[in-house]
Image 1 (spheres, helix red, strand yellow):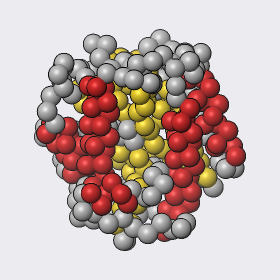
Image 2 (tube, helix red, strand yellow):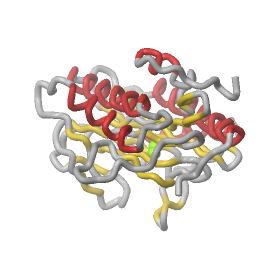
Image 3 (spheres, helix red, strand yellow):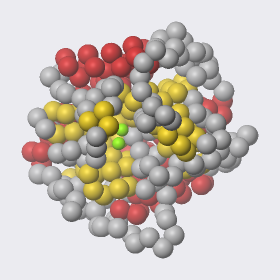
Length: 279
Ligand code: MG
Ligand code: MG
């Protein structure tokens, strides 16, 4: 069963989404050589607390406690990196994932940020990953099926020229998800189209989905470290992760975790976003 939200509930998710946007903006501005991932976590925690929100990350996840309000995944870490004493160095590449709860409603988003000057193929990897997220978001419209989002993400990545070294590996085993009264809900949103898989449910008004491609410069395969959280690529290639939470409303999509609701990026794709319920 996919949870369907009322406009009032979507407005609360917009409030949560804006807290996440603020936290990620503060983290992005703080990323620099010499900063630790634990310091970024403190910055995000302060933004969440200052808005009277709570963290959905620093919580128990199926019997496994996550100790941060952000995931800080550096270089060949894809997702779920635990923030702590790791010092960022010039040339590193960090994906920051953050979530927040307002009045029981959840937001979830992620960005990739270069640390100082990074190799051009990494900037391109981040652009491709972010672009694939927007291509997936562009498929969030009434009448489409869930798989149209997966196809949007995958086909965008497959259309890109290959990087000078390696290839784009769409990470397998992780993906987006429904979001609302909990962070992770039905349905799972694959970042690629699996052969023989049904096209999934029709997208209808009131659905809210987190769309989050993860792409490496090599393999799609990963493993989890002994800390039981950090996910790394099997071949050591570096990875990027971008995510937004999106609501499908009567008046079109609204990107809950983007300050402008996704207006600018979706306009480039010929899509008009729904009015911001909190504006
Ligand atoms: Mg996330
Ligand atoms: Mg997510």
